[in-house]
Image (tube, rainbow, N blue to C red; front, side, top):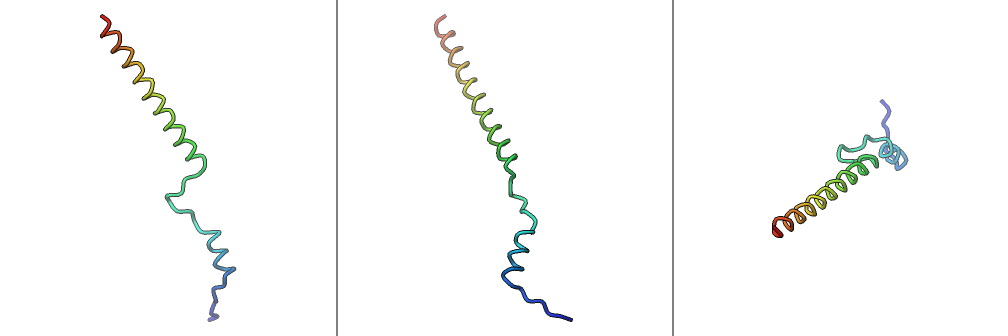
Length: 61
């Protein structure tokens, strides 16, 4: 049986072709998460404005 030696080139090739880890997010996934966070922030700001307007109306009456 022939013994194989690990060289720097073989290590680099193996590293290049290894499967990505489960925690790695694609650019698309990152963009979708950012968009979702942006929408949630806008919704929270809108609800806060509406609650403030309603409180002003209730106080004025």
